[in-house]
Image (cartoon, rainbow, N blue to C red):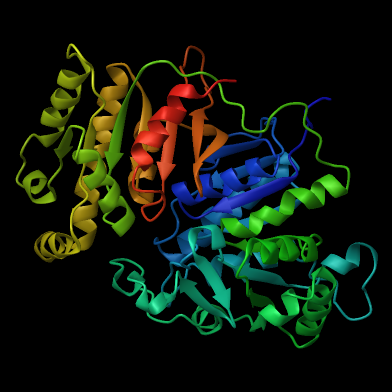
Length: 453
């Protein structure tokens, strides 16, 4: 069969690793997926079933996040996408000012026919016109569940999971109906678990009732993958869906059932990438701390210290030299270059430099290391941390990624799509800070080494 000429699903993600996480879900569902780094400069058609635009809009000013998201929507519509997905973190990372609510509102406005109303128009194209979407960050495979509107991380409420101490988006309220209502003028409701457990038909009925009550966004409960498949089926006719990557589990089946999804090869196929590798870690999350500790127990590592960077010490030069020295050894070794440290150390550095300054220094240093190592022949990059991943892909001037097989839940192998003559692909594993098993770095390197079309 031939590859479809126009994509079916268009996605807007508020950070880089979140975009890759979402793309991973779609590939698992059989959709050939391309992730763009920001909004492409032109509307040249892209051969894929799904497109994911990766923004860095989670913590910027809400107005800027809205503008970037609407520009992404325009590009996705020009590509021919039939449904839009707005993806944010499975821990609902946001502040009182946004950005989940403002972006969802803006996308709803742009996708809703203002001349149509819900009442009396439940057939044909008008069926889709009422301003409504769901919001579901649940990702049970990674222990994020929503019950009665409350978000749990494992057995802990979001507000008691450690996310209450996040330096940029402290989550101190686990009730997502309350959290989202503070961010939006739209009425927020709840799709309860007992309704979802009765299946897609019951969910559709509940959505009709919520719409009639004037609800525009409904937090959706989900405690298992089965719930996510039910939500996907029930929401197949919504122009906009919002949530974490988990909700995407149920979307490919809708296109397949409609006879629109036809691929002639494995969705996870990647081109082979030859060359050496490096691991870069900027996240201070518990999962990344454990991964860094596990790596250092048997492999070389070089630490990037934000305070030393602020004093002008040449850590980038030293890190590059460290990596090259180990690559040129009689028994070459892949190295880890990391800024990951304990929460107490993070607080100490931030108290001296400020959170924004400390983050900028680390991101810039790791991005510079990545660029210089790429120029020296490194072609495979394992990166831990959303902000770090964004900085690295920008430094490498990666504009598009083809999404491959899953390494760990939420983290696939990827390969850059050359966009200029003579450009070589690089292999990338971009990991959200909290994702991955303790041996993730080794598994990611093995998969990047073994990726073949």
